[in-house]
Length: 252
Ligand SMILES: [Zn+2]
Image (cartoon, rainbow, N blue to C red; front, side, top):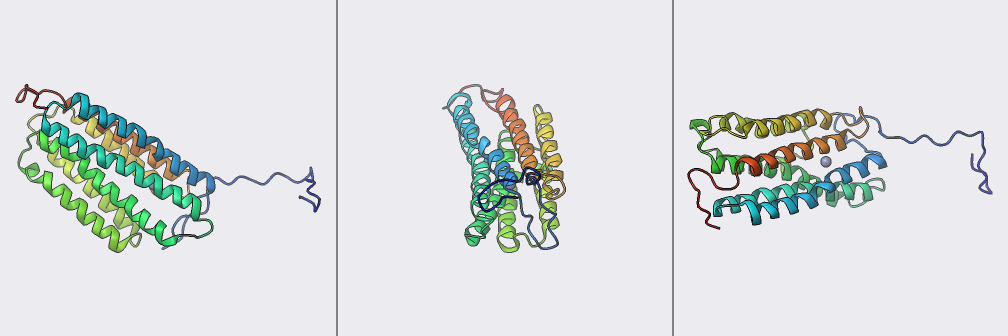
């Protein structure tokens, strides 16, 4: 133990570093450790720069038609927004949570973090539903997914953290539901990458629910989001951008 003159007793074991806290009780929020706060912040901060650069590059180099260009603006904006809102929220939690400061700011940043996921889901489907022709279940989906996103945000605003399991189920329905329709597309090339990306998110959700059971569970969920987004971005680049059979001539 440290004495009054600052001498450390060599027999005293060093303080144990805690990588996770106890699981949150019903109606409580999980209290991440300092290491978890840092991991949560860094694991999504690393997505911001690449998403800006990649989508800027796609827009300038690979968008072959004006519609592709607009779609890359939408997809790129909401991907960057997802990583940015998550980073800002987790960074504020790191700075202010332990001393319980700026509760209102943290509350609204958390809503923004969650709302950005709904917008990101809609933005991920939009290039596919716009550039490819869907059969009956998918015909109206390109505007319906944005309605779902707005409904999700309204739910988040009104019932934030109140029914956590329902919230997770809602995410799974909104994220997974439209995939049924995209498999009715006339041209299905590249959809295997959409599936792999979807599986990354699905595995990630398991870790999303493991706070307090597994150390760094939330940061692991973030990594799976990065992997899922990377698969989907690659699929857009490889299968949706550039000239196609019906529109071989560039107009941008
Ligand atoms: Zn997060």
